[in-house]
Amino acid sequence: MKKVPITVAYGDGIGPEIMEATLKVLFAAGAELEIETIEIGQKIYMQGNLTGIDPSAWESLKRTKVFLKAPITTPQGGGFKSLNVTFRKAFGLFANVRPCVAYHPFIFTKHPKLDLVIVRENEEDLYSGIEHRQSIDSYQALKVLSFQGTERIIRYAFEYARCFQRKKVSCFTKDNILKITDGMFHKVFERVGQEYPDIEKEHWIIDIGSAKLADSPESFDVIVLANLYGDILSDVAVQIAGSVGLGSSANIGDRYAMFEAIHGSAPRRAGQNVANPSGLLLAAVQMLIHIGQNAVADRVYNAWLRTIEEGIHTYDIFREGVSRKKVGTKEFSDQIIQNLGKEPEVLKPFCSTKFKENPKTNFSIVLPQEKKELVGVDVFVEYSSDPAQLAGHLKDCSESLILESIANRGMSVWPACFEEALLAGPYQCRFIKNKENNSTISHGDVVRLLDRIQKIGLEFTKTELLYTFNGMEGYSRSQGE
Ligand code: NAD
Image 1 (cartoon, protein in one colour):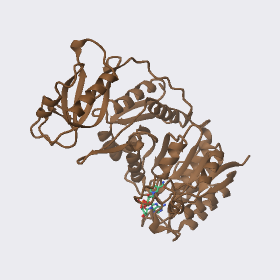
Image 2 (cartoon, protein in one colour):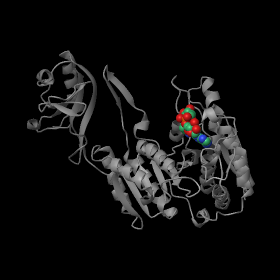
Image 3 (cartoon, rainbow, N blue to C red):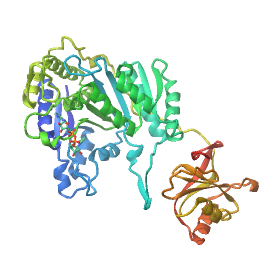
Image 4 (cartoon, helix red, strand yellow):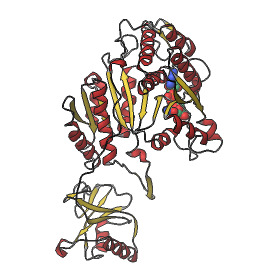
């Protein structure tokens, strides 16, 4: 078998120990890998590089396109950027795939039948990191979902289910509240799902879906979610399966892929030969499947399962009465090496060789053809007094755009008003095209409106243009409007 070049980062804290243990097992199992090592993390951050990535690292990653990464320590504050978010965005790693499996009765869990995969969108949502402060008392972050990004992750989830013979895909959203963003995610799920009649599908509102996941995770198979929901729920799912120390993830793009444990660098455990290398080792199993070395992946996973069955456990999964021997990182990986070639006797043996191919990633996505029309503008105005008074100032600012409503943090305060509503931050003043004029409005009308507002001495902090798409409003209505 031809050696496959991969890039490896040993990381910080417990990173070097668990990477050493992982690579030792991989090579003992016959993995055909050519390792290129790169420097990322704390040492590079401390040199004043805010990304934490040495420039030479990019060359290796671009060459190999496959990255096995140990956890790193992100310094707090000081403008340091999350290295993971940088890699995900720079290499278009749009899908985060986290298998969550219970190893009952060998690792304690309340959910012995748990066996699910979380497919989390990896690049968009609140992780776009677009945040603003526009007044003394209000803070905001923008949730951005694209149609293309959504369709891509949903298609990937269905492709994943098909390739790995999973039966059901569940989608979690909060579209009862976020009707435009999460509403689009849900609609795309329903539409794309129709192309996969062989796979069962269901949608859950995220709050009750999460409760169901925590209570009876065995009823789920593949779950597809937007970035933040997926981040939170994948940790929950791995923890209730047994331990976050066992969690692995694959970050998959069209051309690049990154594999890592889900836990961090656990600095307090560093250098003591106590850390559990399982999360990184299982990430390496995902990597071996990705590069087509399935037989090696199966040997590694089955030897690991056998070791878990034998009760040879690191401290984090050690449980009196269940485990037989508490061991350190090195002894644990040595036992896995001894068990290479063996299969588990109670747990289900792992067999990735029966799966013929990896899920597709290069989807061609066709944008819907819709007629877009500018119909108004929300102008956010800082004003310290009564909203009815503000309405009085704004009423005659434009002939083509009429003041329709004023809201405060999504709650209507004019003309409809709830007396007890807390008022904070700028007012959202909605101007809609004057239907009596019976003509279209232009950006020029908006600019003239803003000019008038600043001339009467009011401070606007931002604007959002209001569009319809095929006549459907592309903006939300405030509560109580
Ligand atoms: P952590 O996951 O590093 O550790 C939390 C606790 O979990 C540890 O104290 C330890 O008791 C236990 N633990 C974690 N991994 C273990 C393992 N393999 N074996 C045994 N016990 C283990 O979380 P944290 O303390 O919040 O973060 C530490 C650092 O890691 C921070 O700088 C954080 O930014 C970083 N981090 C990095 C990544 C990554 O590189 N992907 C992910 C998460 C956190």
